[in-house]
Length: 466
Image (cartoon, rainbow, N blue to C red; front, side, top):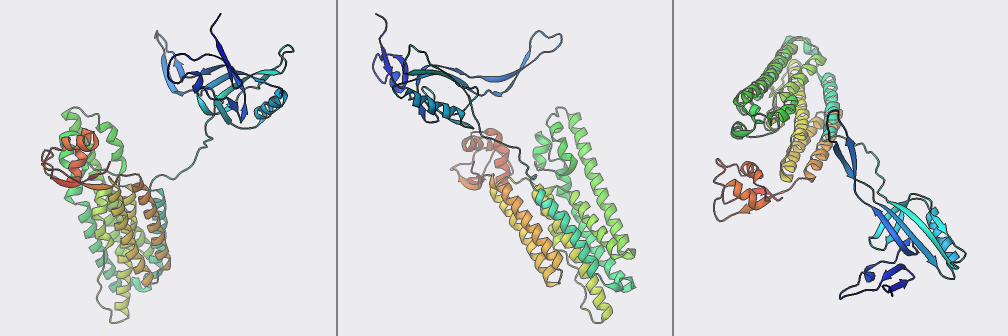
C-alpha cells in the first residue's frame, strides 16, 4: 500500500501527520476567496525581484539593475464538492466577477489582498458527479497611490514674505509726508537712512559671519570654524567639498567661498550707497524700493543662522525723532517714523525667510526660533495697528501664520533635547557610541554641549533624545 492520505472538505489530499508536535496538516488554513470556501488540490507561487538587464558593447557580462520586488503571483487549483456544488459554484462565480481587489485565504500563506488577473476556469466532468474543479490566478494587490503636490519646505513663508513686502511698500508711500520735498524733511530722512546703513554695514561686516564662510569645509578647518548651513549657491558646493583630498583643493575651495562672500558684501555695500542717494532725491516709491533692496542684500550676505543672530538689530530699529513742535516738525517726525517702520518690516520679512531656510538640529531649537520670530512679528503688528496701517498689520499676521506653520512642520520630525549625565568626563566618541550606537555623531554632541575640546565632555549636558 502507498502512503495513507487524509482527505478534508476544505483541503486537498494530504499526507497523514507523523512525529510529535503540531502536524503540518493542522497548520493549514481553510481556503476561501471573498468568503467563498473551497478545497485546494495544488497551488503555485511566484516570488522575486524585478530586474532590468543592461547590455553594453564589448562587455561580456550584463548589469542587472534591481527595480524592486515583483508583485507576488499565485495560482490555485481547487474544487467544490457536495450536494450543493452548483450553489457553491454560483457563489464562486459571483466572487470572481466582483470588481476590485479581494481577500484570499491561502492555505499556507494566510490572509492576502489580491486581484484576479485572469478569468477563472471552472470545469465539470460527467463521471465526477457533484463536484466542480477550477483554476484561479491572482496577483498581490497594493494600495492605490496617486501623485500628490506639496509645497516645498518654507515655501508658504517665502510667498507670504514677498506679498508682505509689496504691502509694506504701498503703506509707506501712502503715509509718507507730502512735504517731503522740503529741505528739513529730506534732511531728516537722510539722517534716519544713514543710521540704518550703519546698522546694515555692521551686520555684513560681522566677524563671526565672515569666519563662517568656510564652515562647510570638512576636516580640521571645518571643525575649527564650526559646521553650519550657508545660503545661496554656496550650498551647491557641498557635494564637491566632500570630495576634497588635497591642501591645494581645500585652498581653492576657500578662495571660491571667500570670493562669493566678498561679492555678497559688495552687493550690500552698493545697495546701501543707492539707498543713501535715494533718501535725498527720490520719490517715496524710490525710497521704499531702495530700503527693501538694501535690507534684502544684507540678509543675502549672511547665512540663515547668522541672519537669525544679526537681523534683530534691524527689526528693532527706531529713528527717535525729536518731539514735533510745529507743522514742519510733525512732518519730519512722520517721515522718520515711516522710514524706520519700513526698515523694521523689511528686516522682519527677511528674518522670517532666514528662519525657514535654517535647518534646526532639534525640536527644541525649531520651537525656539518659531517663538523668537513670531514674537517679533507680533510686536511690529501691534505697532502697525496703532499707526493705522491696517494692510501692514494683516500682512504681518499672515507672515506670522506662515512662519508658525512652516517651523512647526520642520520641528515635528526632529528629536527633542533631553539632559544626559555621567559620573565621569568622557570623550565625545565614547558618548556618541553609548547614546546612539553611532560614533559618527560625536560632533553633534560637541556642538550641543559647546565644549572647547571633544575629549573632555561635561558631566551633564543637553543632547538629542534619539
